[in-house]
Image (cartoon, rainbow, N blue to C red; front, side, top):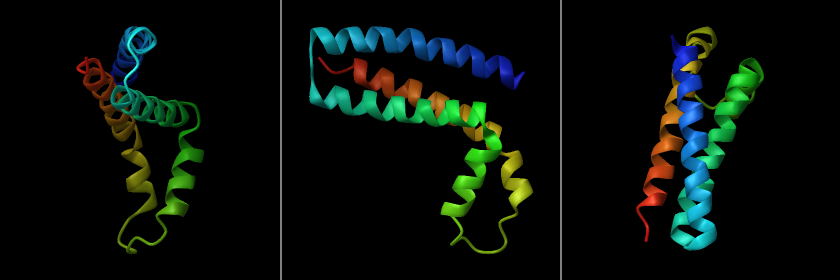
Length: 102
């Protein structure tokens, strides 16, 4: 079920991004560009999680090595797919916000 949701949201992201890029070409605004860039960065993170989840999580785990010891590696890794869907939804929302600029 989660894989279907990810595919559906990815298709929605691609469709919305076509409209957003077309709008940026026709009417360039720096504020809108900020949200588009953030959306594409989150989408790139989503793709990295989808293609190589273990590698992505290992990189994030090394970066957050300063966390207390009560964080369990396996439990946190099991929640990665839910975080992936959250990143994708956030990137779609950022694209929607960029469409609100005139």
